[in-house]
Image (cartoon, rainbow, N blue to C red; front, side, top):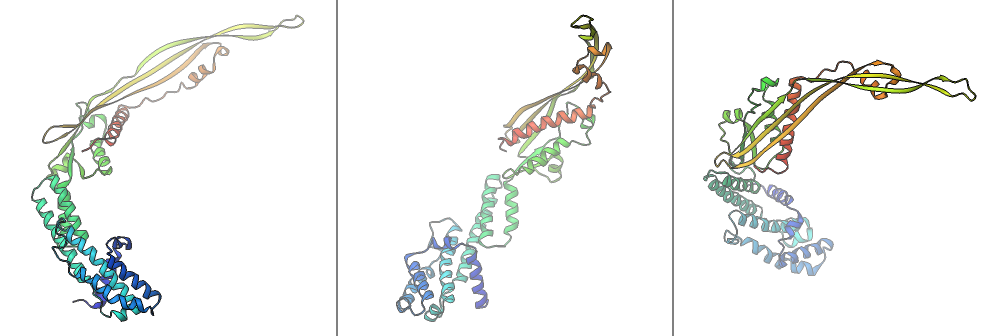
Length: 379
């Protein structure tokens, strides 16, 4: 048996777990009378009326909770009835603490009832009933009952921390309740990911990472390798297929721009003098390089058992790289500012590589898919 000091300390700690407001919700009229009388004695130790009324008021309030047993709340669910009894006993524990803390009250009631042990027993019985219910749900071995089992084991752990192996059972139930989604390797337009210059199938692992980081409720995402290594059976499957991933060749065309401008070359000898103009011309020779590419990503997410589609959609992206270079013939004075921009940008610009274009297209299609999933796909 623990010392009286330990019991008192335990009582204080248990009371600290519930706010005064929560405890006050369970006050009866008798409880309110006791607390009112204790408050009067706290303010005035010589209050004879309060001192005379307190013993009987306390006896009535304490006897109600001393009599509580398994039948008191038998209309409530398993576990919940004992938690309600524990809550009622917290009121009695609050009375005990206040009587001990007020010298005038402690003199009148030198041995108030300490409900700490009974309160602990009630919580242990609540944990036992929650635990047994959780074990029953686990025996069904499916996700729906796995979630129910998880809730029961959590209640058991909250009622009586470290009760039996409840932490292990919580993990087991959570695993059973979790929807397991396997993301398969990506089909890169009938080519291996190495063909497009990728170090690995980064898109598959990006989806696993990003969706796990999104913290979907009771859902966990795996690559096919992770699932196989851990003997995980898929509940949902994600298939990613690029039905089109096209990187074109550079196409070059040429065109010319004719420029003509009147420029002043002098003035007449007449009075007053008049400007003399000359028409100058130039030809801008433009070489335009164009590289077009496109991609189309199909995504299907479906239930492994029924084959029912959760998502079936297509995500497209197009990208055109273009570069223009120019030179001119004729009189430079005929040129416009836009012509000079072309001429001055005639330095060789490296077109993006096939690998760079593939990565751009793949990422853009994937980001569209990820946005679509986050906007409303329920696994």
